[in-house]
Every structure is written in structure tokens, then in C-alpha cells.
Amino acid sequence: MRFRKIDAKEIQGNLFQMIGSDWMLITAGSLEKHNTMTASWGGAGVLWNKNVTFSFVRPQRYTREFMDAGDVYTLSFYGPAYRNALTLCGTKSGRDVDKVKETGLTPAEAKSGAVYYEEASLVIVCKKIYTQDIDPAGFLVPEVSKNYENHDYHKMYIGEILEVHIKE
Image 1: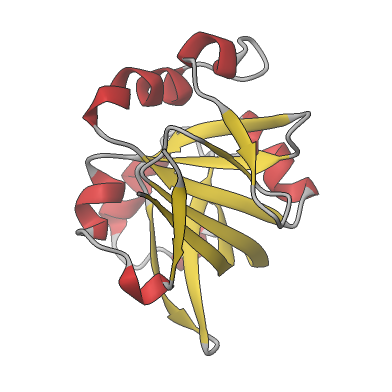
Image 2: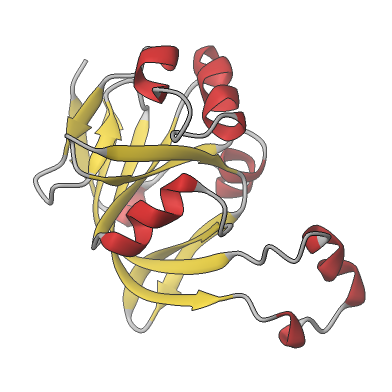
């Protein structure tokens, strides 16, 4: 199957469902050396007159090293048949296992150099335009801090959407 490029405004589906329940992979690095992780926090919208995504990565995640080092990354979405692959990518570290080998996912490269997997049904290619570590002093509602029992606060990445591809 091939991908077709679409405008970000043409993305179909409920992003709350796609991110929060179905999950996505955040992938950064080069085709030769990259890492991916499963995420269920994030979103998309308009900021600074740009179509953007926002993603969150904890400090202990191997993918964070790749996110910090590079300029581009992808968010990719999959059908139910890939749930086990997404589970593995969310529970095993790329420091310890070869996620490509373990999941059978096929890495590919967008023209920007960002890495995605051919099995995705939707790929959003992003260019990093802002990062910020979550500061617990900014929590205005006490129950939010319960997500950080280990004080391992996420870093937020805002990425300008460069391209969106859907499986034909």
C-alpha cells in the first residue's frame, strides 16, 4: 500500500480517541539510528499561526535523546492489528531491545528525513519549534501532580506539521 499526502485539516477521526485510547508512536532519529515509543498524551491544533502537534516525553525514555538531538519527528497511528506492537514499543526500551526486529515494523524515511513505519495508517511529520520541561510549580490543580509520583516530569515538544500522509 502507498501513502497519499493530505492537508492537516483533512485528518479524519477523533484525535482524542486516536491518541488517548488507540495510541500513537513518536519516532525520532535517522533511518540508520532511531527510536520509537508509544504515547497516549498529546494533541494537535493551531499555535503561532501554524498547524502544530504537541507531544510529551518523560526524561527516562530513550526516544527523548533522539527528540532533543534532531529537528524532525513523526507521530504515527495504526489499526487494531498493531496493538501488540504498540504495547511493546510502550513497555520496552530501545536501549534494551531492537523494536523494529521485535515488532516487525518497517522503517521508512520522509523527504524531511523523519522516520515513520510503513504499517501506519496515518503519519504526521513534524518539525520541532518549541520545547519546555513541565514545571510542577505550574500545576493549578493538585490531582495533576499524581501523574508524577517519581517526579519524572515530561518535556513538551511543539512541532509544526510539515506533512500528513494517509494510507491509500
